[in-house]
Each structure stands twice: as structure tokens, then as C-alpha cells.
Image 1 (cartoon, rainbow, N blue to C red):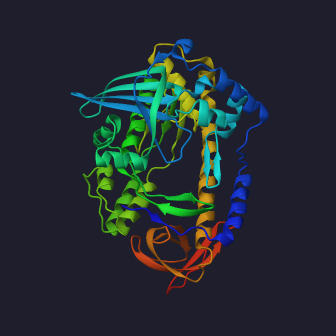
Image 2 (image 1 turned 180 degrees about the horizontal axis):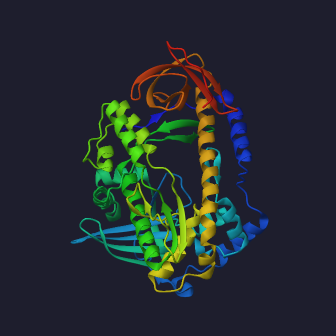
Image 3 (image 1 turned 30 degrees about the vertical axis):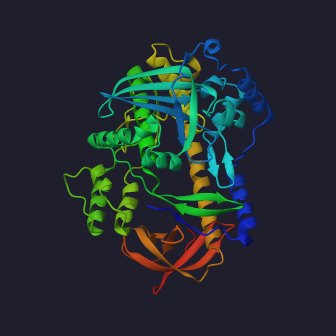
Length: 487
């Protein structure tokens, strides 16, 4: 499905938008630069940590033609893969950037990273977790560079089930950096290298395994802010199939990491409790009211995968997104946590594939590598596990505030100057005193307070306010009395 794109933010409000985005960063105390001592320690590590296999004492896997698949323009490359089909299934090598090699426990880079928690993404630039000399250079799996990595090796059967799993620290060399779009085109036209050509098989088989275990990936199209020249526009797209296939590589690895840590009795999981029975019954009633009933006996994930792209189906998915709540982290050492599953995945799971961009992955990698190879978990990692849930929770809250606040401001800027105009919108849900809607053009989500309409229907709205500084838009329902409320 082609991407839906808005017009560019009008020139006359770009300065106001820049000031509003800067104010948002300041309000969240987000600073892209690093203190001088942090930069010095990072630069020293970048120059001192060896990447020659013999000098580093690591396995040499540079003969494997790894490749990376990321959004276009990415420079902080956490993962590289090599996938080979075999007569009985396949062999997947998944290399994850060896960030622990460059971050001394208790050092200035480590302390700063614990305060940040994760890389934050804003329209006017990212706020990185680590100094760029590491995150976009020495530790990043850039093409044609020798790089340190934790390499997962999965021997897969014909159903892409892992029958053998190992984890090794090694030196790798990526051959090429692919964007999702160009990699998908290569798969479609038959010019893709073997690793890419095998991804549809892998993704389809892993999706089938997800159905078997009762998992339910809910891949909703999201509005993205796209920089273009000196301005921004909004884009909403379903993405390309390869994005789902590649996500299954990370999911497989996260499940393998969780299994290793649970078996070893020490680690940290990404958890989510199952939906409450009353929420499930309410959701079932909502699907019937929308004309797309979820019949008893049909697995939840199977039902969601069978939905089309109609307004009613989009409304069903909106309600479905509210079924699973309470995602968090559970650290343990000895006694296992009461809740070990990530309910939407349908299995125990751990964040372990993005250490350049997410703090907790550094711990998971170190713990898993030690357990997988019969060694003691390093003391620094074991002793600080209990800190991680709180650090990640605070970081996650700030990331959500930044993402939502930036989107609000860009949406207001895109709509600026169109006050009084009317727009068609799909009603996503009826919640509280009003509607949550999605404009058909431009791709903007909004709230219309005091209005009443059926979820899944299409309504006509009039824009009454677009405030860039506050990131607020207001609509009224055409032909009905409705109060306005800032979104």
C-alpha cells in the first residue's frame, strides 16, 4: 500500500516549529551533547579496543558476508545478519554490536548512559545513548569495517525452529548496508543476495510459529515525521514485508536470550501480563458492534491477522492495542519472577539486539554470553541488574513524551493556515467524552471532544485551531454541536 504523505510544513511556520521542538527537548531535559570527560573516555575506547581477531582473542567470522537492514540513512547499526538456506532448513548468524567492549563498568560513559537509558529520536535530530564516536563509528556495524560483535548462531529446521543455538564474541565484517526499501526491491526483482532472498521463507515460517504459540503481532501503520530539505512532512505507511521478516529475527533472538537467562537463573526479561478477562470480553463486544465479530474458538492473533484495511478494521485494531498493557522489565537473580512471559509475543522474551540504542541490552548480552558458554556472569552486571527496570521505565516515559510531543507539533504545523477547512476522518474509537479519529489526508490523528459517532465510521470535521507552539489542534464535528479540546 503506497505511503500517505502530507504537504511540507509551510515555510512561514518553520522557525516557530523549530523553537517549539527545542522547547520540548528542554522541558524533558534532553541534551544531545556529552560532557567532555565522557567524550574523552569514549574516544580513548574507540582507539584502544582491538578489532584484530588475534589481538582481541576473538573468533574470526569475517568470511561470513554479513549485511545490515535499517531505515535509510541510519548510522547507529546494532545488527547484521547472514542467513543461509540448507536442505533441512537454514543457518542464521545474527551479529549484535559489542558495546560492552567499549563501555567500562562504572566509567563516565557507563554512568552517562544509565542516566539516558536509550537513544531518543526527534525530528530535529537524535539524542544518542552513547557518544557518536562509539554509536555511529567504532561500535557500529558499518559496512566494510572490522567490528566486534556478539554473534548468535541458530541452526533452523524447515519451520525455522531453532534446533541448536550458540553465542560467541567475534570479529565480523558487514559487506553492505541496505535500507528496507532497496532490500525489498532486490528481493522482488530477484537480484537480492542469498541472505536477503531467504528472508521471506524465514519470516513466513516464524509468523507461523507465532500463530502456533498464540502470539499476536499488532503492526499498526504509524505517522512518521520525514525530514525533507529544511522542512518536515508527515507520512503513514504499512511498510514493506521485509520489515516484518526482519523483526522476526530480533524476536527469535530475544526469545533465545530469555530462555538462556531463565535456565541460568539470572537476567532481565521484557514482560507483559496477559489481558484481563473483562478486557477480553469488552473487546469481543466491540468487534461485534463494529460488524467484525471475533468468534469464540478463533485465536486472537489469527483474528487480527485476518483483518483488512477498512475503517472498521482500523477501529478494531485501535481497541486491540489497549488489550495488552503493563509492559515492563523483570530482573532476577536466583528466584524467578512471578511473570516471565511477554503476552503479546506468547513467550518469555528479552531485549538484547539493540545495545547501541537501549541500555538494558548491554546487560542481557553479557549475561547470556557468560551463561551460554558456562562462565560466571560478571559481577558488575549481576550487581546492577536490579537498577535496570527503574532506569528503563524513566527513560521510556521520556521517550514517549518526546515522540508524542514532537508529532503533536509537526501535525499542528502541517495544518497551520488551514483553519476553517473541512476534512474526512475515520473514527478509531469512542473513549471518554469524545472521539479519537484519523484524518484521511493529511495523516493526522486527533481527538474531538464532546462529539458522538460510531467507531469505524467516517465523519466530516472542521479545523478550528492549529497551535504550533503548544502542539495543539482542535476540530469540530460538522453539523453537530461539539466542544473542542486540545489533543
